Image (cartoon, rainbow, N blue to C red; front, top):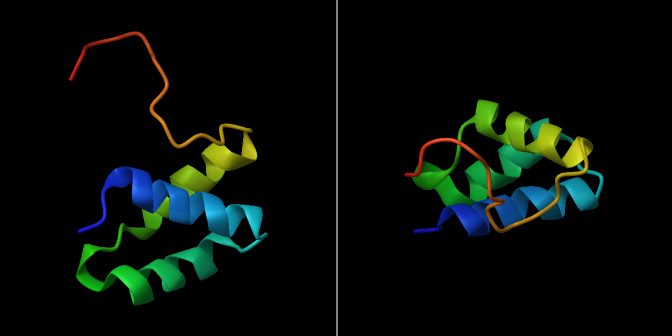
Length: 66
């Protein structure tokens, strides 16, 4: 099973290859099958990339701790 970092790295890779979010969703569904993330999550992560938030590690933020 792929963890969140691996999935984020896949989305980041597709973004840097100038793939669209729709194509990325199709690619991830083909690779991860039942474990693929949803379309909404891919689009949200693409929006992070467009804002320049291209990182794989979690960034510190204020609020409740998990």
